[in-house]
Amino acid sequence: MHLLINGKGHDDLPNELSVAGLISHLELPERKIAVELNREVVPKSAYAETALTNHDVLEIIHFIGGG
Image (tube, rainbow, N blue to C red; front, side, top):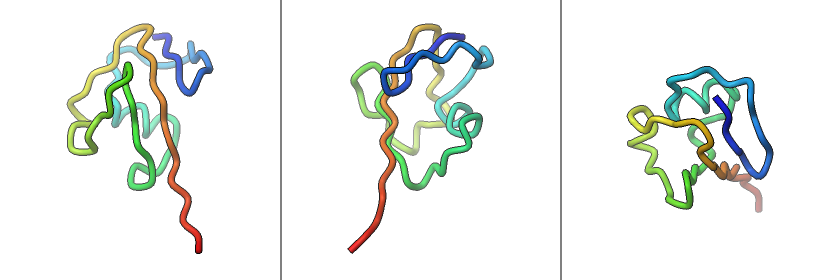
């Protein structure tokens, strides 16, 4: 499957992938990110059931704490 993630093409992804599966595949910490799929924010509670399709566009934002 081909996805555009943060402006960069990714062709090496498995088919039938959910947002949760993508986060796991990319080894990202689910608790410290926000995901936008095709210009709509995906609630964390919907990551597991939100299926991705070929040529979807995602923005994944990492939160960094500090003070």
